[in-house]
Image (tube, rainbow over all chains, first blue to last red; front, side, top):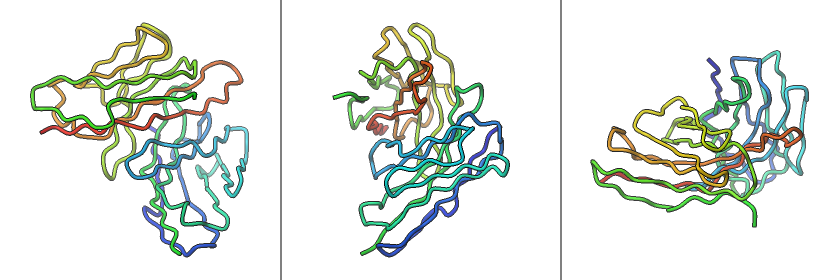
Length: 112
Length: 115
């Protein structure tokens, strides 16, 4: 059974800092891994999707990497801004492609 | 405007009542999903459907029912058999065609509170 863990559960950084969010998964037989952002009381917004054959994906100030062999993915946020404050969730797709298993998220606060 | 809509945004239910949460998408996605989110826990899959008139149970289907009569719609009924229904419910959809990217997209959610 796939288990996804995100550490730390919460993170507070000053504006402008570069930061890394971590995601680990127990079953390396994944189809892809997706990173999401969730604002309080809102739905999930897809940030990046990395296919199992890829090592990284970039979108603006975001860069996500994937290391299947070690069961890890990281989300790198460059030059953080207060608007980046949200909960970031990673999810690994397994089970014949039908199942997306979520981590519990990292709550990020970027302070002025 | 393409996307996933969920209604209502907030829903209050008395104990013993069934309630139905609406989910509609105009993305022409084949697959649709229902998740439940509780504080401090990851999203948990309730039901999913990959084609009209077919659906499968997820990890926590007990006390819930769904239907998929149209490609665009996947309503979720929370029955009185669900012992702890107070939660945030999220609907999602995904393109299953080849080359569709396979990202999963989410609606804005419905917060259900049992009084």
